[in-house]
Length: 170
Image (cartoon, rainbow, N blue to C red; front, side):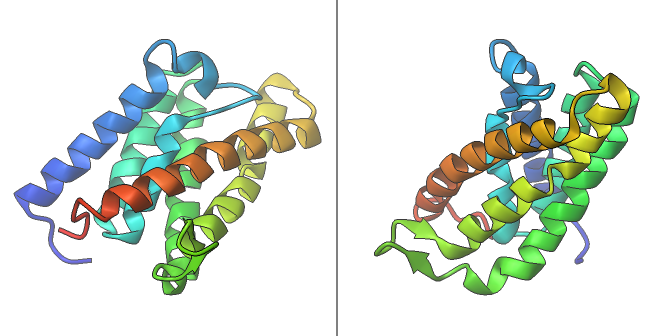
């Protein structure tokens, strides 16, 4: 990765702060933690397809939001680590589809593939919740994956449309 400029650091800080606000502030915080999660902030993951600096941004945002959540320090590392690993992998695996679309331009293929991939990765969060709160693993995985897919699907539409008007590559 290239050396980060002050502009890059500013973008990272802004996106990380946006992630925290969209996750940890009322009323969104009621939906952001626990066995059924819907984090609107997850839509910011798609920025990483335009510039890898946003992997840092969403990872930091996730770690800060998780520090403010119900589980505490372990969630900072499990959730933050999961975000770092799976967003990075998703960008590597699906970047080649970034300019391809389903349904006559309706949804970006890379974004849709990533939404499915990242939703399936919620097994890490389900395992964490199983260990800490003894929640049923399979049900928790399904509910967190479903919430993740819905928020990422919405995010795929929003970020793809926004990228037509905003240059996220800089």
